[in-house]
Length: 256
Ligand code: 0WD
Image 1 (spheres, rainbow, N blue to C red):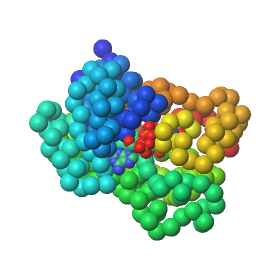
Image 2 (cartoon, helix red, strand yellow):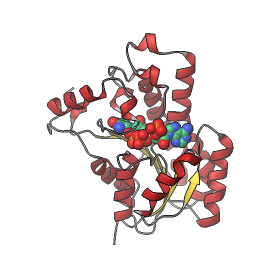
Image 3 (cartoon, rainbow, N blue to C red):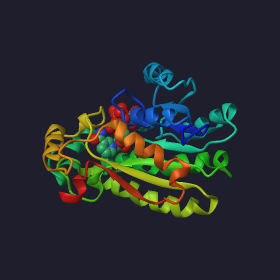
């Protein structure tokens, strides 16, 4: 018996077997959860479908989080298969590539700011709002992924740092808003991991090797390690935790 036995959880942001969402799906599946997945666009469906079979899931729904209709459609579709929802994993972030390199003020503009905040922060609240009817009376848990750039001016992270700061505030406000319904909201702040999204950040390799040198554990973290903590936070074992940012970064934030 796993600590997520029969919990019905929707996972976003699964794109490859390097995605953090993949590590989370692996841990949640191992702990007995029933999983559904979203994909951003039709041309990505095939690859998400293939990955989902590894987790005994064929429940795939398109959801580009920049479109309100797609978010609404996602949960009306989900309601056809599931009588309720016990959790959502928000593993989505985006900023135009040009905004993720070089000097912050040189790289930021209004459009990059708006897109980064819309896709990387607002979408978490938007998913929660649309999912609310399905989560009634189920002690559901919502989880998102953030990064240290929310609280430190990390090189090249630029406007995404602002969006992650907004996302972390979103976690606290959402936790406060949903707590009375028994719904918990948390974030994992992951150390750097080489994924497709991360490859868009300038000099990401340097960030990885610096973290490896400086972190107390003298290494980087894996998607499995992030997945285990995410699964725990979405489980009844974490019933007393909400509004928290939990670092899974080999201790890097405690020394650097
Ligand atoms: O070092 C890292 N990789 C860290 C990632 C450290 C700390 C936090 N994170 C965060 C990211 O900021 C993100 O919030 O973890 C989350 C997942 O990121 P990931 O696993 O590193 O990246 P990836 O496998 O690329 O998945 C992110 C996906 C997108 O990928 P692309 O590469 O196409 O940007 O987010 C999805 C998309 O699949 N996504 C969207 N989904 C729905 N609607 C949208 C959208 N509009 N935009 C991006």
